[in-house]
Length: 326
Image (cartoon, rainbow, N blue to C red):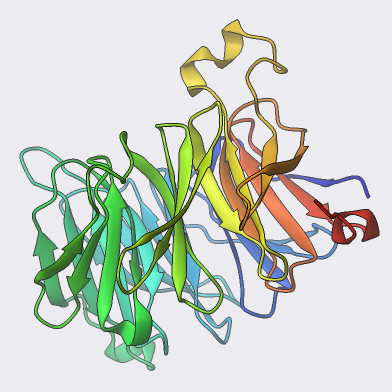
């Protein structure tokens, strides 16, 4: 089936997120306005207006009632998904890069960039059920890593926080004490900055994508390297099928070089790999610039990609895809 082209953003896409039911798709872009779409037909449902800078990341609560967004305007905002109203604004002294709700949606982890002499930091905030009781105070602030932290997510049972970023090291932090429990081994880890990180549906492992032209699969508890996927372009986005043993990598050359090369040479397709055998099994072309965001629908039957070209492409996978045998 041909992809549905969703045009609503005026600037490059930065992040895509499905809700748990798989009927809504949230998109973030550099144009200040997170957008929500119907995931089946790509119809635009609404926008969340209030940010004053590029929006880097978002997450939606388990019951699809709350949205949290992190932006370059140095804030993270809580929104009512249905009405689009702002419920609360967390303000920081540097851009908010990554946001992630905990299991149960009672906590959120927000990362902030290094800025004007400040180091990058990971902030844990308590999320109140009643928006009127929401406060901005941090339960925990973790500092330390060099360079930007591009992604931080909750580990099993909210006991740990997993972070990854520009220094190419994956760290597992104790969410109670703030101590570093594990760091990825430099020998087997990524050689360049980590751009993206996504957990598996069951939360037992996660995948990271890096500018070193590879993606790696890790055990979430032990930080053991399970698999390695090599490609010939920097990886900006990674996602895993919740249904089949497939991994999707998206990327392309640096955005600044796009205008000087043919779109075929830029390698802008989303590449499918066999998760176990680590072999490439196919690709989906379409974007006229690097792919910056990828997300699989929780039902495993469709996926979305967001590009530097400002489009979200929604791909419903047909029967041929499910018949792929290696």
